Length: 142
Image (cartoon, rainbow, N blue to C red; front, top):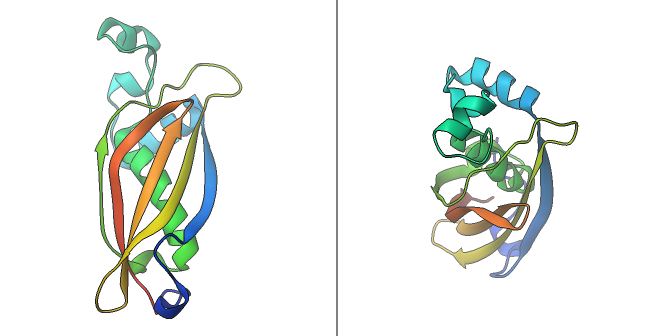
C-alpha cells in the first residue's frame, strides 16, 4: 500500500488536519498491558508524587504514538512514515477523574525532499504545555 497523498499535491506549509487524543487512567492501564511497561509512574499516583511528578503521567511512547497518528491518517498508510523522532519536553499529566488529559496535535509540511518524500513537523500539546519537541517525520508520498 502507498500513501494516498501525492507529492505533487503537497507544498511546504501544507497543514495536516489537527487531532485531539483523550487519555484517561484506563487508557494508560491498557497501554501498559500492551507494551509491558508497568512503571508505577504511569498508574500509581502516590508513587508518581513521591518521585517528584505532579501526578500519574502518560507513557512517553504512548504520547509519541498518538502524535504520529496525525501523519499516518493524513498519508493514508502507516508504512509511508520512513523516519520519526521526537524529544520529550514535558509529561502528559493524567488526573484521576472522568476527563483525564487531552493530547492536541497539529502538523505541517516543513520541507519537500527528494524521492517523493516530505518532512512533516508536529506540535503536540497537553493543556498549555508543549509535550514533544523536535517532533519530525519523513513521509514517502505517492
